[in-house]
Image 1 (cartoon, rainbow, N blue to C red):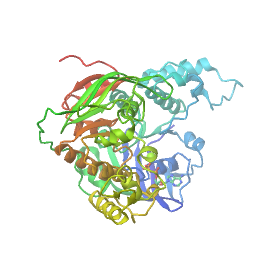
Image 2: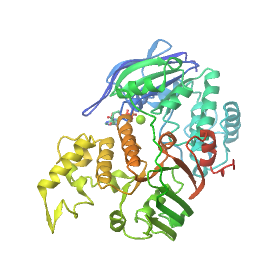
Image 3: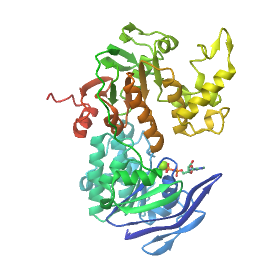
Image 4: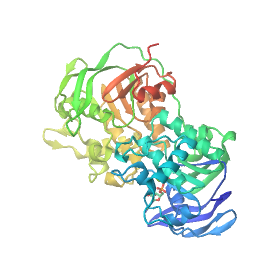
Length: 505
Ligand SMILES: Nc1ncnc2c1ncn2[C@@H]1O[C@H](COP(=O)(O)OP(=O)(O)O)[C@@H](O)[C@H]1O
Ligand SMILES: [Mg+2]
C-alpha cells in the first residue's frame, strides 16, 4: 500500500437518460480528508463507484501516484489499496465480526484461515484507530454505528490506504458521529487518504480539509475548507443563496392545541413502541421531536392521526378527545399530516397532481356540491396551489410518481396547509429533499406557526429541529427523555438521543 495521490480525470458516466458524471475532475492525497458534497442525485456515489471498480467510466481516466490504472472490479480496487464503506452495509448478519472480516480473504499458505490470527490483528487495528467492537459479537446484534466500524475495519484489514465513506453519518447519532470523526482524523495522521461523501454542510466544514461540490453531475468547484463557509457551500450546491436560519417572532399564546397524555402504542410486531408518553403543543408553537430513527417516532405520529391504535392514554386536539377516532374524523377536527412515507401514505402515486391535491377535501364545499364534483373549481384550486407552493410539474394531469421528491413534498404541504389546520404533524418533512425545497418547506412551516397553527415536527435531522423548534422533546425507546429549549448544546442533545436522561439543570 502506497498511495500518495489519486486523481480522477475528466470522468464521464451516462445512465439511460442521465448524465450522472460530466467530465469530473477530483483528486485526493495521503493525509487529507477530501469531502464530496452535493444534493441527492448529484453524482457522488456514481463517481466513487467508478473509483472502486463497481462501474466503468464511459470516458476519463484514473491515476494513482501519477500512473494511469485500470480498475475493473472492487478486487482490483482493493489490490490498489482502495477501500469503500457503502451507504448500505454489506455484512453477513449471522456471522461474527471476525468471520465477516475474514470473509473473502485468501491465505496463500493454509487452506483454512486462522481466525485467531485475524482476531488478533483486528484488535490491534481497533485500538490503533479507536474502532472498538467485540470480535466475537454476531453482526446482527450490533448497533448500526458498530456495524459501520466493522466495515471500516474490514477495509483497513485489507490494507486500504484510501478509504471512501459514502454518507457515513446518515445512520449515526451525534455522539457516534463524534467518535467516527476521531477515527477519521487518526487515519489521516497515519497517512491514509479519505474521501468523505455527505450532503450535510456542518459536517463537511467540521471534518474535511478540502471540499469538492458536485451539482447535476458536474464539479461546481473545489475549495479549501478553511477558506469557505456553510453559506458559500450551500450556494455552490444549489446555485443560489439559501436561508438556513430563521427569525421566529415570539407567538404569545397559552392555547393548548395538542395534548398527549400517557399514550402507549405498539409497533407492527406487537411490541411496545410508544410508552406512556405525554406532551403538549400550543397554538403558534413548533415542538420538535428529536431522536434516532426507530425510537417510536413513526408509531407516535401514526397513533396521533388515527392510523395506529392507542393501547392506552389520551390524544386530544383543542380540547376534544380524538383517541382512536378514525383518520377522517381527525382530519375533520383540523389536523393535517405530512407523513414520513410520502410515496405510500402521502400521495397516490398513479393519481395526477390535481387529484392528489384534492384528496381529503374533495367531499367538502366549495369543491363538491351535493354529490357532484365541480371540476372547474377543482382545476382552479389545484392550479392556484401549484403556483402558490411552487410545485414544479409539467401539467396538473401529470402523475405524481414522475415528480421529484422535493416537489411531491411541496404538493403534500400545499394540500395539507390549504386546509388551514389547527394542528400540523410533520414527520421527516424534508428527508431526501434537496436544499432548495427544504428551505421552502421550512419557510412555510414558520409562516404557519405565525398564523397560530400548533406544529409537531418529528425529525431525525437535528439541524432541522434546532432551526425550527421552540421546544425540543427528545425521544428514546418510545419515551420522551426530556424537553429542552432550542439553545441546548448539541452534545447534550446527543447524549439524550442515546438514552441519557436530561441532567437536571
Ligand atoms: N445504476 C444506475 N442506473 C441508472 N441511473 C443511475 C444509477 N445510479 C445512479 N443513477 C442516476 O445517476 C444520477 C446520480 O446518482 P448518484 O450518483 O447516486 O447521486 P448521489 O450519490 O450524489 O445522490 C441520479 O440521477 C441517479 O438517478
Ligand atoms: Mg449517493
